[in-house]
Length: 218
Image 1 (tube, helix red, strand yellow):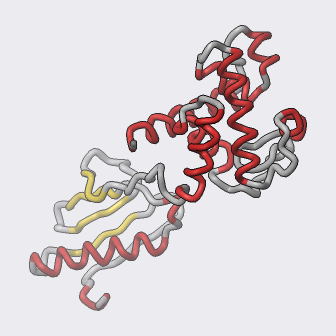
Image 2 (spheres, helix red, strand yellow):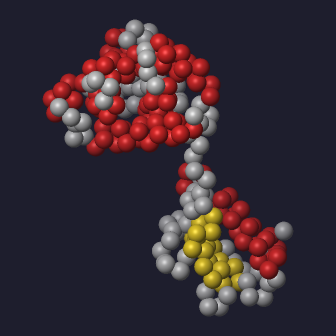
Image 3 (cartoon, helix red, strand yellow):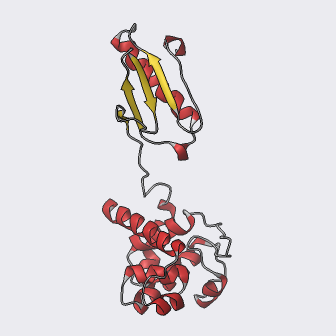
């Protein structure tokens, strides 16, 4: 099947480019060749690196493909499939709903925190020692009566309980509650705002992005 290609495929690490001579091929073969090139492209690039694909035809009839639009002549050809925020997480939904109901929290916010903190990996451990789905520090886990932070149900209930306490403390200001969840309430109290820490700011941004996605998916 690949023998139908009349041109070449050019792959490199920094800027994945592809081109095929099309001036002597029928329209049907052109379409097939482009499709095959895109299959080759996706086969060579890890899923995490996939991106939009752009194309343009030069004056010699050569089609060029790239994942980095370095020239205004390139136009969008294939749009990257965006992440489905609900993918692979349904097994925790029942626990999230139960914990959210118990502690009067919005399930989408709890789910967003889990996504941002651990990517739904119940075995996750951070470099600072935070553990489990909601990345509870040992002291926080103890305060929330979580005796096994790697148990999904115990971790989610403990994390949701702690998040609800932060929401109550900061009068339902989600950003301040998230800042306290990440950096500690003493830091929020000290600055009387979101602490000027890049990690905390990035955490809030990630959570809010997922939160909006989960709300929209309802």
